Image 1 (cartoon, one colour):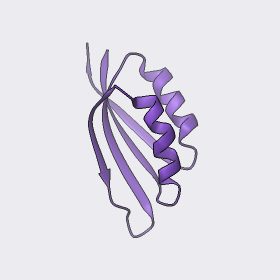
Image 2 (cartoon, rainbow, N blue to C red; image 1 turned 90 degrees about the vertical axis):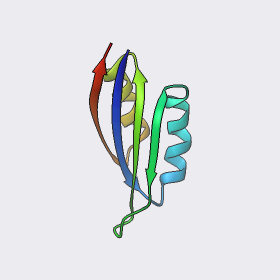
Image 3 (cartoon, rainbow, N blue to C red; image 1 turned 180 degrees about the horizontal axis):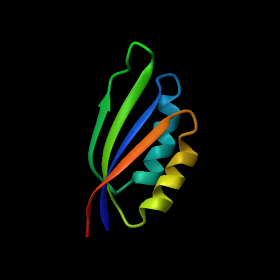
Length: 79
């Protein structure tokens, strides 16, 4: 089990659709979540701290869900 911080930046217009699909992937794994308001350019940011078993598989699944956004991650701890 690894603790991962995921930073997601996506357009404000499609945020509702993406968050609905994202919820199915991260249900039960969230340790912390923070949703930032959109910037002047219309980009929303979502920071999640998750407990994940296989980071590579999870990030690839996450990138399939988030097509119009950017996903960055960093592994905080490994157990």
